[in-house]
Amino acid sequence: MTLSMELRAPNSSKHVKVQESEDLSVLDLPELALECILERLSPSGLCNMAGICSALRDRCTSDYFWERHMKQKWGRVIGPIAYRHWQSFIDPRRNLGSSKGPKTNGWIKLICGALPFSMFGSKFDDPDNKKSVLPVDSVMSWYLAIETGRFWFPAQVFNRENGHVGFMLSCYDAELSYDSQTGTFKARYPPHGRRSMAIENCVQWERIRAPPFETCSHELHVSDCLSDLHPGDHIEIQWRRNKGFPYGWWYGIVGHLESCDGNQQYCHCHRTDTVVLEFNQYDSSSRWRRATINRKEHREEGNEGDGFYGGIRKLYDADEISRWKKLWPAEVLE
Image 1 (tube, rainbow, N blue to C red):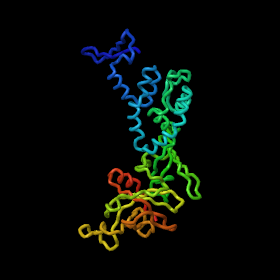
Image 2 (tube, rainbow, N blue to C red):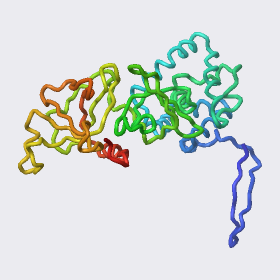
Image 3 (cartoon, helix red, strand yellow):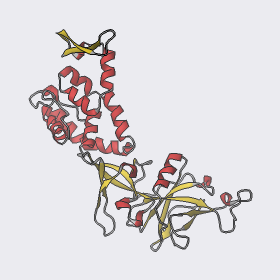
Image 4 (cartoon, one colour):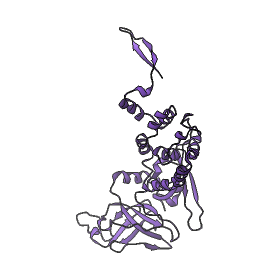
């Protein structure tokens, strides 16, 4: 590597380019300086740098640099459940790599071939070089698997199926694959009842979240907030059309009993066993506008006509509440 610099002559605005006669390598830099440079590289920059030589490859593929990129780009949509799916996804490849060595390079070439930019140099991608194999369980490998859309990860999607009126202000489990060309996701919703798998394209980032808990979509969430529900509290509640459907999470607000005029000074709604849930996205005459549950005995309540209400989660975080409000429909639902 040739070291060059620009100098400005005294009392002059002109810059003179000076080139050193001695070739210097970036590896000749102090360790701290090199680390600072690598920390500022983008993912594609790290990958390109990793293709220069084995010494830089070892540095540029380390988890230390990639964990930051992983958190910055995917932290909002990737959670512990997705990580466990990733571990299951790579287990066969990890075992293959430990028994057959360089053949794990095929997985890396599969990733590299789908990238929209040249992320690897020839030395890093050389199938004949046994040392060129990127560990399949590295953070870099995980990042690239998501970036290329090769890894479908579990997450939750707000207002599924392009904001279909039947799913407004709800959040459902799905498997997602990233499309680096459009910067959006493809979602696969699991089949239920007589419906086959539903697929939605071009799902925007703001409609996706990592599951805040590990309850399966067919399991009843254990409600630990029932005794703490007061009028005005923001909540999410599980709801499903019938026993064969998965639960979705629906946004609502704790309301007042009909016998209460809403005056906070005299309100005793939080002391009663009955909890009123209001879904104000629906018209006041809609059967979906209000529901009641029993604070002490609530499990799953409902029927085949109105659906079944499951576990409740109280929202404490202002950002979560704000996110729901941003998804509010333009018109009142019937």
